[in-house]
Image (cartoon, rainbow over all chains, first blue to last red):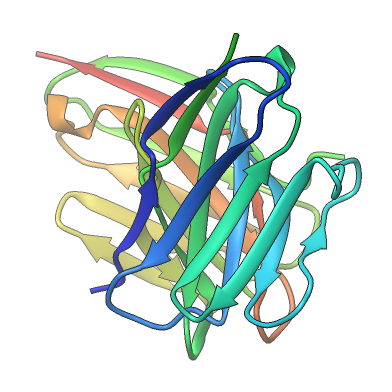
Length: 116
Length: 112
């Protein structure tokens, strides 16, 4: 149980375009999902916390207009990188908490974004 | 400010050796998780500790939460090449849904 999927697993896009990444909890309902960014050989950096049916809470320094997060259902959250630039290239990972076990997070496999 | 300090940052050992990874903070956490991440994949939850002084074992891995809930350790006995990966500790503070504070990670390489 507690399986989280992400799609796509990797994507290459041109500078100036937008890219949508999906995060799904496959066998449980996730009230809260989290989006992280990870640079090579570094730890995870929390970008935002997404609650179903409400606006996401962004961490300091993360541009909410650039990284649009939508959590429309209890099993799906999306991250849209708008007007992507090469510096947005990174490994994006989502996670979800099990209801009742809010301190444990289960991570998706990640999405490798390369902006050319 | 780095709230969780992990050490060592990198560890290269031979198969069969023992090792310990440390995760330290000046802050108190309500719980602490250990994850392992392989290249190109998301972190996988290994264990959660919530009680000060708690010890949990997962096969050859032993996790301990400090009495004051400010630090934790991961000990691996007789390491195997399959243990290779990035080990991350992450602390949660507060109740309800809780964001995690991650350490910088320990990259473990176990050679045959």
